[in-house]
Image (cartoon, rainbow, N blue to C red; front, side, top):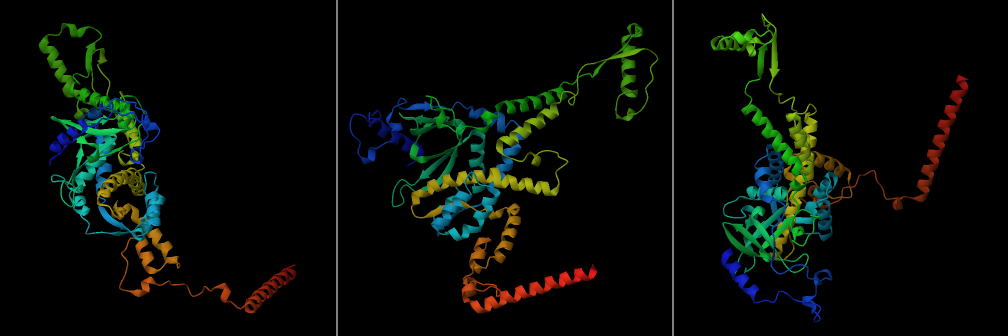
Length: 488
């Protein structure tokens, strides 16, 4: 059954239900219990929340109309799409919880590196799981690379992501997904229910109106503090909502610069203060204008001295782009947009401080900042969809694909070399390698031979050793004192 048929069937079922219920009239059974907040009806039934955030403007006049914003978002989405999503089985629940915490939305570079060291201890890859096919090609017209870029791009531009689950509707695999699609947020409306946070469906309004059941959509959004009775809080807040004035200033500065180039016209007017020019014929005026253009203006005359046989004046018609500070305005706007998205501005600016080390540090900040934050948010959505399969699977991306993190991995390897309390396979897994099952020695603990258990030492021998060291120390002190006496 296709999506439109399912929507019609779903709408028909909805008509037979008494949606407007008053939970205070009768006690609720266990399956009907709601939170105290949701006992109050705040909305009417089937209220459409259109989202007052101008998502179409953010797409068309923002991402598609501003080169700086396009560069910032494209840099994030393309970098994020490099990481491949895989299906894993959870081996260690405790380490799984630690990994999730260390790679969450508030992760730092240090916590991400710690997470990488325990990932192979917490999970093992499941190559045979059917969800792998969706992670390779989510739908018929998109690769996973493009799908990831679309997922992250929509969310960063509009603050919202709507993933539609194309599910199997019959048979043993009923309810399981066989395809995923990104629905354009600028053409979506949310059907709000009768309570503050209740959503009962979605509508895609693109050519025709298609109603989609709530269970077929995974809606991911940025936090939104704006609440009203129109249901605006059900939408994520676009970063461009806060940056709207910055975006408009950037667009106007760029448009002003283009207009100045298109309509520059004459730079100014030269005139004769003595009044000699007033007696010139049209032909003589044209001849003088040509003489000025040939002998005064142009690159070939740069640095030359021009002569005039009269008292001449000049009126400047306009200011240059530098005088108007248009370029500085554009730079300032781009820097603010970088700050909005947590991207190092140095990656997009002509900067005298752009050394190799700085560029490497900026790229690392890009990856451990907005890139991994967006990958983690997408990971949560994919794991929500993976619940339809049941079991203990975990969908995650592979951070080891980024060379910028390998330097930290080398530091980890140096630390592991001294960690004798870990066996060889534990060290291999912590540094991103597979477990060595062929060599039994890799499961042994290699303890340095100069370390001894204090309980195995003979107390008398230990006391004699300490006394001997004390005697040696006294004799050395005495020798030092005698040496001092001799010098005195």
